[in-house]
Length: 162
Image (cartoon, rainbow, N blue to C red; front, side, top):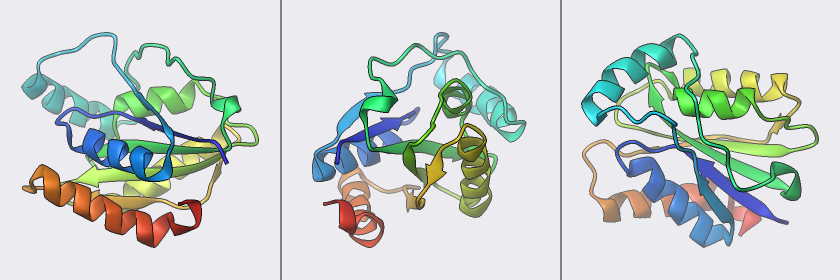
């Protein structure tokens, strides 16, 4: 089974989770990048507002064809109980026909259930099938703790893929 981990990360926490997943599952990995990169503090303010309204940001094309993969693991921080604008744009612009996806989230607070439902509806609208989703709580945790929590999540949610 050929796997691709696609993610967006602002603080680095989602990137830590994505890289751990890719390493453990022997998957290819791709970071979503926005065309315009505002300063981090400004991005939190404007990004949270945009995420809450299901807006999309402009993202750079990815160097992978999702149709070459059997499974896509899609990672996003949770902002305002929703996926981030870059992930929204990726979903909007991608035909997921016959693709299986597992969204994963990082968060310091709450909102996982709402974000999981929100992303599943968007993926299914673009003909994808959501198999599962999970969250790794990253708030106030060190890199090593995030890696450890991610490995636990893999054993719980992705054990059939390892």
